[in-house]
Length: 260
Image (cartoon, rainbow, N blue to C red; front, side):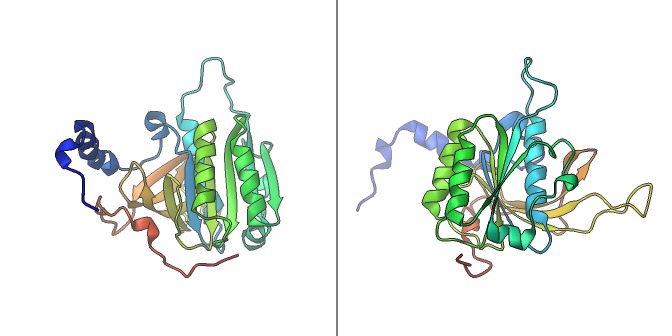
């Protein structure tokens, strides 16, 4: 089929193409939700062996929530609930949420759903995204179940964008497959920095995070951490900027597909 005559295309098409490069070259950083709005559908790939997936998802979710300006008539503290959905297999591999170990502001707000199958978890996630009274929705699904195909991912994206409720979907022990998620991470735990005052206390959490696909940002790697209740991001050692044209990075398969 012959290509259309370029001269017949509207000027706006070329302007959008020229503007796309600088927009996508913008580096991700904590607190961007204040300028760019929420990243409404995020995926976080992680191993079930170190617990980094859910922890990093919570850190990214709270970074977005804390960055947004609060309306004048709203309460000082956000008391909206958080929906946390797990498949039984994901809970078996990584464990269920332990409320006393969660951030204090979250302990009384979690609604936990344990789903037998991936289909049930996807249904619960989509229904949660339709509830505007939720602060965000967090999901954990193990492997690459057939139910979580591109169509199902697209349904989650549309529900999140239509109702304005962010989704952070943790993909445990999963390969990078097709998805409509707007931003996709792969994270792993790193050793905590030495405590400043008491060497016997646990250090702050840290993760190595690779942003391998994003609609508005170039790929890159960071060392994420927590300081004073805020998310921090430093450049990963040996990290080099990726080519902006590498739009297919999210399609690379680092492990065989694990079908549940």
